[in-house]
Length: 512
Image (cartoon, rainbow, N blue to C red; front, side):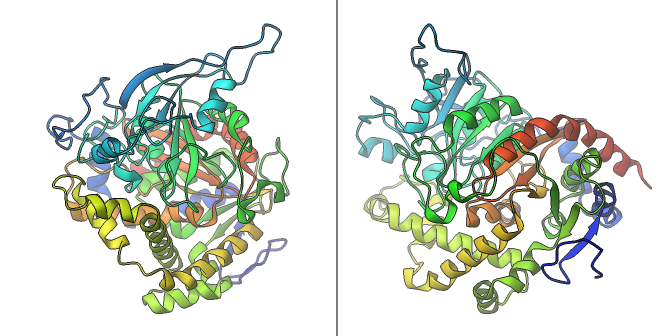
């Protein structure tokens, strides 16, 4: 491909530069080829899924009773906002209600970690998670703990012991996980919810349920008082009904009492808050993995923001090809895995690295209870048993690849540039979908989410619907420490993008 004048050169085959609206048109050029393939998915999406009767996983006898209509909460209890001084100005989250995933410690409660055996074998917490304290200090009041996937090791939102919270915007479909109840609670009595995200556990349920979600820079929000899963991936994130509340939570949480890793230290960022991005890189291989409606989320952004991104400031990037060119260790892993897809090999590295950490963190406890009947769901057993076979010495090359990927993408995300892509490849699968369909969706979804999981970079999720289709979601990604820019971008642009989405989808579906 030819390089356009004034474009940034990284690899000759990776880039094509054009105006934002031209990129939007390009995104949809393959619609005819994709339309037939995704027709059944589109019809399912139009219906929002089948009715939910009988399709939730069975509730085991050891489960907690459902305490709210949507099945979002483990337990309802009040955590009042910290008392406000009479002369103190209004706080960022004054009057806001929030829930928290059942992975956060609260003094006097047991954090259940999505598993009855864990709950039975762990003591009452003696202190409260730092993130919860920060929200209360900012004026928010807690309303209870929410359900999650077992041991946080899934992105579906289905739990063999407690069932799946109802997806209120796509009944009969999964809510996404592992922060399933937190996302659903934002559609009910909470206006804000704390979750965690290692491999997509905030981003995926935000997309599936249709709420705003934010995974910040790894380490920029304190994880003190949070049960670890895979520590170098674990990130405290949150959900909100609107971008204003999403940003307000950021002002309360970001870099207060946190201890960022050197690889993702926000202090190294070239960006101070209050600026909007000036350049967009549209990830074309991510778009190619998605159904037409999900592709339309990116087209909507490009067209709605055409005036904000004049010609030359919006660029297409084949991320997988770029990474294989710039990251020799990732290229070596690709050779060993016999794959030519840079995105696929990135996902493989992520899954194996996370599995190794999950086993190192919880393998001994899991092994001690694995012989107990019904102690773990089938999916959790499968993933933990596979994790037990990951040899730590086999991960050295993948760890090198991770550092190369972080450096390569960090050079592109320079404080003025963002990546743009769909959050998930399509609508959430049905609750009773065949295992092979669920696995295909999981694989595609992790191929998208692994970009920020591997780099520790921040990602904001903007929900979209059209004539009861979806929900779908768009993501903006920035470099380490550039969280404020993403939250400001969501506040500034989400309404215009969301308003453009129905028109873009209709125009595409109506075309012969």
